[in-house]
Length: 456
Ligand code: NAD
Image (tube, rainbow, N blue to C red; front, side, top):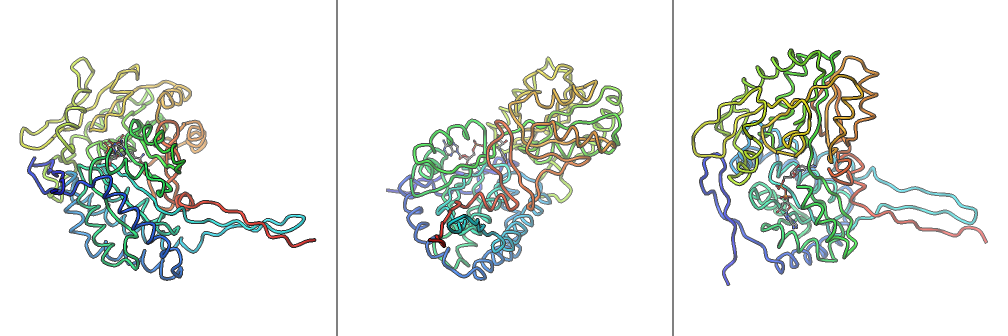
């Protein structure tokens, strides 16, 4: 029987790029078998050799930086400068976990009749299921700590954007000290992803994607009692207080919501502005948004590429109803490709669909507020809690508000969301568990306690 394939398309031109293999459940089960064998060998290799392998991956990624960035840019529609920076981040992530690998150790707990020792043991085989918006970075945030902790890894990339992860798999296989330690299985979420979730030999699933699919994965994982980390949707708030550097906040705001054409789980797509500075903020924000260059992702000065697919373009466009108060509507080119220019909406109530739902496109909703309490209440009035920013010159206020906003990652006077050294993850329906930092590494281990009797 011929191998089934999935077509991959360029969202900027709507041209067919290539076809990739569509793994069946049986293909995935074979990959899991190979991973089980590989993991037993991997965890026994000397630490220095394991660190060397992770550093070798970082070096290889940098050698192939331009190739990987081009693949990512063509497949996702991402501006080439952003794709290049992301590939460099992937190398940095492997480098960080190479260094962290030998810093993880257990405890000795003295007891009346002996000593208990704790060990952070590898889980075994890890299934990583990734979305289409940041294929390589998100894969690396899981592959690197999972390998560092002594596991084998199988990644199932999104079927729309599998090319960079597939290439990473080939590159890693070429230098891996153990065959089958890292594998990529392409194909549909329900079949290839479902096989990873159903198989009892997979000890943990790390899923990044929509809240809806995350909920179904959590339910399915219960059967085999899998460990699960979920990084899901967001509708993050950008809080701008009247005592902030309003100009700086407004100039940074387009990057916080329109980067990656708004297809970013951390997008600060609800901008809460204190009423006394609303006019000043809106003027500066529109001017900074107007300066963004939408166009060919391969061009070095492009800021915004297209949306990922026609289907996603339709879903985002459904939010752009005529009954809303638009402050700005960018000009969308009439050309092949799934283009959509930035849109800025004012919503006094914060209750419209555009203000509540995750749009995952270049759409910002501005919601005015009067008091600090109002700002916190509106920010928390969401099923999500992934990211967000607070702009204020008053450090006490910035910290007070940070403590009250129900979100896993916040930044003050900055758009920064994700650093490899610090934990990242969501409150509420934005997910469970943490990636990155040392917590990310510990998330790929099981804690074991061994009691040693020393007294009669
Ligand atoms: P998605 O949920 O549709 O798909 C994500 C992955 O899950 C894909 O690989 C897909 O093939 C697979 N999948 C789909 N159905 C499955 C099933 N039944 N069983 C197993 N696997 C299945 O998400 P998407 O559209 O690719 O990505 C967009 C979403 O991802 C947004 O909601 C965004 O907020 C979220 N996201 C979250 C983070 C984060 O870190 N919190 C980061 C990026 C994206």
